Image (cartoon, rainbow, N blue to C red; front, top):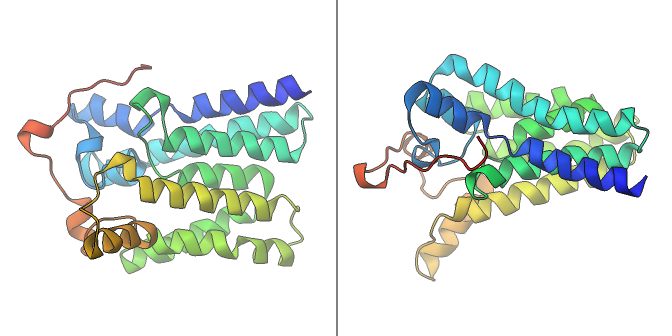
Length: 231
């Protein structure tokens, strides 16, 4: 049982590491998505820089990356905590992909996949928060709000005790990834560095303008031609 659980969690991480957004950007535009916009390997950057229609298959695949290991955890009778851990491992793989030298996305689609399996009410709850953020022009703070409020929904909807720690783990993964920002350099120490860190944590960007941030273009010299190490 322990060996099966460990293997499933490792498999979840490896499945989550498959960088669908990166591969689609290479196949259709021969571009390195890490050099555009926010630099995240995500459906939102596919939408902005590759093709708007492509966000649908990319998003569905990223959701499925977490659904599969979480569902297998239940199917193999390993218990809800193990199933949740396997889905969260997929989110970690998405955020720090072994295929892209531990660069990746933000894991929100994978979080939706975890909720689909372990707490189905969490899926429309988080999706509604993200939709409100999208309508208002910036979903980053709303993603945090959905995770902070998730335990309250679990109480109302009689959810499993695993919901609160799962939401806490998702919040930690999100904050860690935003602050680490795919190893993007920080300004020198001082007030500007503190401002950038605060913007990263709350708004998931380094500058004040969301529109300018997501539409950034690379310099010709910095447009990387590195291919992923697993496919």
